[in-house]
Length: 288
Image (cartoon, rainbow, N blue to C red; front, top):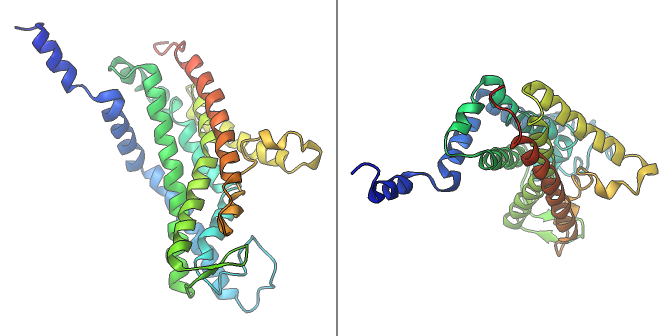
């Protein structure tokens, strides 16, 4: 009989558990967008351009100039990925993360699809969580794109072999690749605070471009403040403070202190701006 306990139990069993289907849909939409693939392609082009430039100017380029590890690329192509991350972290990675995070809620509101998402059993808090997880997944994809593209082009244009770490120890190619993956994980964690900020800003407006721009501006502002020695007391509290702090992953043994400090800082930003996003979004008038 319709409405019987058996029918209601059947309905509950067919519903996705805690937004699993919603998360799968969000990831599918995010990674099927041309804009997403265009940004990933632009990130992949960074190590390619670095490798080609080093290859063409290896004999004429003065040593000791340029980003860290640039001089080691000609001896070992595995350094292309690390160098590309160092180049990408200050601007290119935050730029792409700002676009994705700023579009999370404001983009749906601009398209008029936000109210329809909330009509489904998703719920506002659950939708925020799904949107944040989607942006975090893009952070991981962006960092891996730079590392993988750098590793491939480095292997094509330069010799690949054991890597001498900052502590002077030499490790094999397999362990070197594992450390590159750990560095990509470090960079991913580093960007989670920026994702939370972008999500919060995205709940404040229905104009996605404004949310994207504000997120990117804040990332630049944080790095500028971190570069001022007069603000030493503020530096440990800036979400960008540990963005380039993965050097300990290139030592033997690995120093996990910077990784832990970075993760704790990003969790703090996630807690503060995630709570602010929830407080804003649960009271937001979606139908206006």
